[in-house]
Image 1 (cartoon, one colour):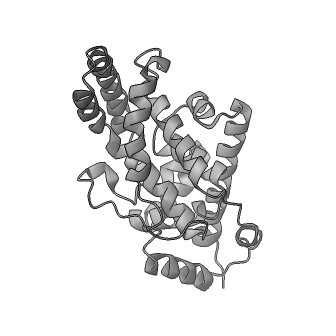
Image 2 (tube, rainbow, N blue to C red):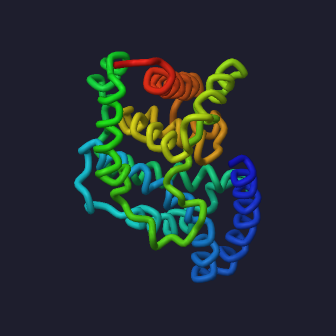
Image 3 (cartoon, helix red, strand yellow):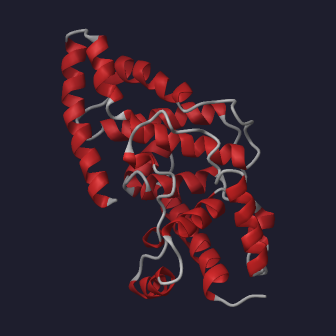
Amino acid sequence: MNIEINDMRVIMKETYSRLVSYKSENNQESFNKELLKILPKIYRYVAKRLNSAVSKGKLNKGMFKPNDFTDQLFIEVYDNLGEIKNENELHTFLYKKVDQLLEDSLVEEEFDHAFFDNIDTYSKPEWEAMEEKYSRDGDGDFVMLEEMDDKSLNKHDYTLDHVFITDEEKELAEKLDASLNKDRVARHVQLVLDKMDTRMRTIFQLFTNEGFTLNEIANIRDAKLSEVEKDLMEARKILRNSIEKRFLIDSN
């Protein structure tokens, strides 16, 4: 994942210089073709946001497609390229703009208190039933990605390393690795994430999936750094506890 993130930062820098050149030439066709090359990951990010909204009942299935938002980026970037001061800011600018577009269109998703208030009491059969329903509904994959031919668009991309980060926690992760396959972990993490509110889930995704620093996320979300740090810590805590309760502690 880190290699992919570092590669994306290099690509963004190279793309920025080309975009500046095409803009100075008033060559919007070449400008758009260049921008198109870096949209797959943003498309994927938008799809995840839409999928979570549909899964939580805050958005009707089929109401929006990812390109309803990514298409607008061509206009936003071309018209506002001057706001991007250097090559390091393009990556953050794109996500900030698409986040603003999403926020304007989506109903804010609330924290599912009923789910989390009872998380300590769920039995293994209850967890299995929730996962079965989630899988039957398509793992939240209501927004299709087949038109994007990119290996980075695999929907199951969460791992235990995204949740268990300290040395002590990694010992627990090693125990789980022996009994759980990657798809099982990814489904569970996404199921729990979809029960969180928009803010907390999005911060976790921006940090984990997109590789942004906490300062960059604060910029994208127009939030205080302390708020971003707190939400990321809380998201990890919730995910860690849910995994421990479900897979490490015997329940009836």
